[in-house]
Amino acid sequence: WPRSGGIRGGAGMDLFGDLRRMNKRQLYYQVLNFAMIVSSALMIWKGLIVVTGSESPIVVVLSGSMEPAFHRGDLLFLTNFYDDPIRAGEIVVFKVEGRDIPIVHRVIKVHEKGNGNIKFLTKGDNNEVDDRGLYKEGQNWLEKKDVVGRARGFLPYVGMVTIIMNDYPKFKYALLAVMGAYVLLKRES
Amino acid sequence: LRKNVEDFTGPRERSDLGFVTFDITADILNGKNGLQTFWNKNALIIFDWNVKQLFLYLSAEYSTKNNALNQVVLWDKIMLRGDNPRLSLKDMKSKYFFFDDGNGLKGNRNITLTLSWNVVPNAGVLPLVTGSGHVSVPFPDTYETTKSY
Image (tube, rainbow over all chains, first blue to last red; front, side, top):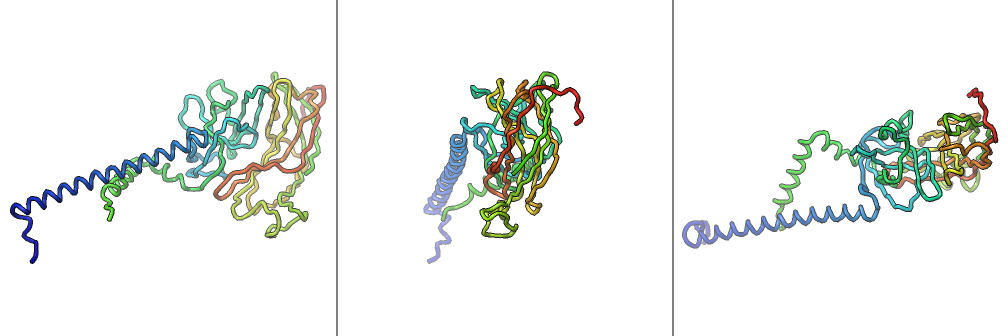
């Protein structure tokens, strides 16, 4: 006997209510799922910060000043262990005081005192001159505190996504909207 | 790995400036059996499928009264995969000015020049390797004021 007539009438209202209730529960479940994914991602990121000692363990190369080794869009993995000495030839990511954007260049000069005080000079492989022009006015050397991390590993191209999202914010919002919709609407069977 | 050096120092402002000329002979592919051909898979090959390039640099390391450790890169070169892995450079002048932080070059008997390189892979770890062999260079006790560099 077909149940198609079940929407109308007293028994039908219950069914509708059931559907609505089930949808709400499903919705809460999806939202919790989403929250868990976000929290896990945050935990992994924070964990990386602790393990590597760097405030930004994964960075994207933004300029061509280290070509042909690194190109715009490459991903770099950093560590920043306090005991790691800074030595000539190392690739460091540093921040100039007062600027947000970290720079990835190579150490070309190191002067270290007996007490561990280090000052060093950097230069991009693809640049003609050293970085003194990039430092703060009057600043001639970098110190350990300016270092975000040392480049230990690298993946090409992968960071391009971040650059595209920065240059085309509409793309970023669209991507977030799609991801949000996917997570919220995906039904676990 | 052999380097020959002639040198003299000159003061610039208040810091010592060193001048070094050098020869570099290096065989980056040297395996256990001596010279190996580029594609020999049994050799200790530095240029394997995952190596995009080597960033070579010659650094001078020394200590002074002011600073326990000083390292200055005098010269660098990018060697791409496919370039001739044997270097034979003679009478090279340093690419970068060899300034000391202070006056620690005059009379400094022990400046060590080493050739090292940074292996840049296509993807993966970025190791820094120091070549075997280094040369110790002394700087004279006096300054030279004329510079024909």
